[in-house]
Length: 409
Image 1: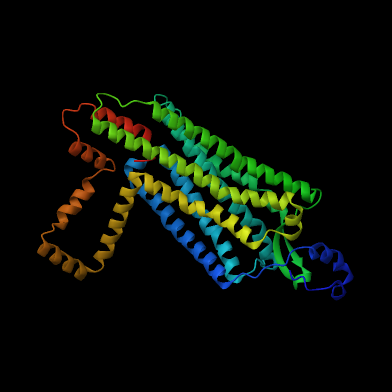
Image 2: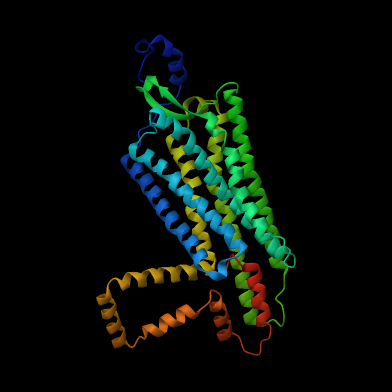
């Protein structure tokens, strides 16, 4: 809001409101380079998230060996991240493109003002609870391998709860969010959090901020960190089963380190991506200057962007550390390529002729590719590198699969 106005130019009913904003620092104009950088970051995040989460869902559903409880939690998280990308990110992108956060006027604007923030919070918080469910499943599988604690019935209850709890926690948005008209700024319409009577605006906003912080950041962070710490401790204390050869120890150590890196990546990404979001809300609630003048645009964009960016980072983490997903993604892309080539037989014929001249047997390559199971690569490598008399290999394979299933491979 411009500060070059004087009280003489305003009607009497707006003098108090002007005096409140008069002490606020002037709003700096965003440069074209900054605007382009923000738009580019949003577009890249949306693209990576869409491709990554669609691949996670498609690969899991198409691979029979991945029809396991652990992967159901990953799919649920991918669905929540996909919804976050579709519902949350376009609004942030639209604000940067239009260079304003003005809202839609009329009844449509009122409905969207209540519904859109509700859906945004539900999707984001469901993704967080899905991360918590994955950590819980890994904890049970590794620390209590002989007990079948995580059943399919329990997993369904957890997945339903991962959506139901955010719905209940976000329900106050229907009451608190309202459309306001800022007459001083030329009848502009904004969607703001404004708690009506009988709620005290400051106390209600403060209490709600604390509740969301505890439920969807502090508690999940503590629980996830604790569970993964127990998992890492359990893995690190275990000894290689059977007669240990140098190659066996090397394979075991590599798998153990990869699992450790993945657990650390999950916790670090969750911590760093969601911390700015909650810090901004605490500043807006408890800091007088931020409460009166609002959050600076750059700080608000950063907090919102990082909270949404985790939807793109989650599939990247699982694709990086999980061999099942990498293999499944390659097969899926190869399948799409074959379908595409079926529409252009001339191209296929030319490629086949080229392969025949270079001595490449494409049919044999495709047959070999499809005959491999997601874990056959590990077995083949072990057979090549380890002497056949090493009888500890089958035990080691079963052991590695046990604690890596659904994670780093």
